[in-house]
Length: 185
Image (cartoon, rainbow, N blue to C red):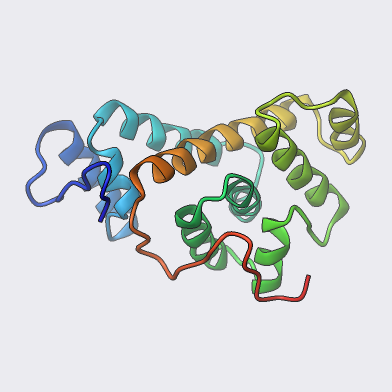
């Protein structure tokens, strides 16, 4: 499942990781391989789950958070997260075209697109965005709190992207690859 960091078996895992695995199983109905990798560090797994709860409690819809996740995963070249968020995005109402657009930082609405472009800029510049990028996202209708929520989504998704890179986590969703688009660009 992962050749570089052990993918834990939920049946034999004990302690805090087992408790967290059970919570994920109850919520999703299965335990994704990424969670099984995160389980090697209960603190890291709990942080990831907490970040997910915090992003979900923000101002953005599930659908828009999935669009952000897709843009960030494409920027960070994470096939696992592209695969997962393509499937989850579909469950949250994203069409195939919207999924492909989101990965590239595009959207059907100007405001949504400005947020995706900003998320990509934050990701690709490691937070060293220009004053112009901030002015553009504000001009599109995002306020300071929204900008910080975009950063929160970047941080949460970058954590998973990097863990997947390090662990080489086996994709357990329908496979999607960075840079390969099925809808005309």
